Image 1 (cartoon, rainbow, N blue to C red):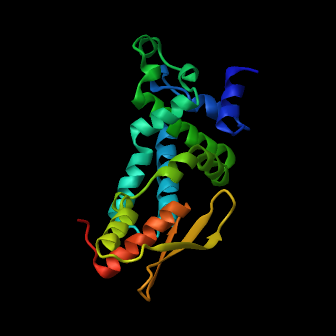
Image 2 (cartoon, rainbow, N blue to C red):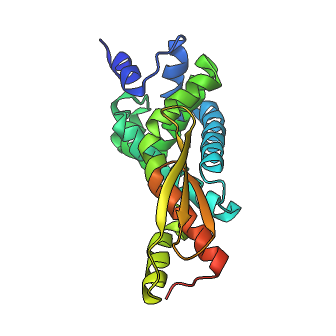
Length: 225
């Protein structure tokens, strides 16, 4: 098994047209063809995929919050980390000067190469292949990312209630929907002594609970102390 075969196993995608993969790994320092056009395509596809995923995963979030989360997921450093996890450095095809200067390990080069691979997968297998690929690569990142505004909603609500000798909120999962690898949780938050029920939706139970707590905070204008 050669290096490109191993890379495709790590990537989770096997190219039908291997020349597309080789072009995606070719830095502009080698002349043409290189990966600049594929990078342009992959950048757009990756941005759309992440934006779509965040839009669906955080239905109550503002444009500003979604933009910040997207930026953290597609920034140069993040993409370079992904490229290194796929062990792309030794596969890059570069001119002698770039190799000697350590270009194969620069964040900018690695992030561009990863975007180029995304573009190549799209041309080789279509948008469904890209989606499967990116869902796996970004799985942990999507599960862990949180809107900054929701970070302490449960804590803030609990502290507010404790200061007023109120009962603590009760959270309940009322629905799970979507594919097994892409579940959406719906959680209600009920505060004993109040008639209202607050609902939150998220990609995990914890995130849905945070969203529900944020709804309670907004409803009653509770403020962080």
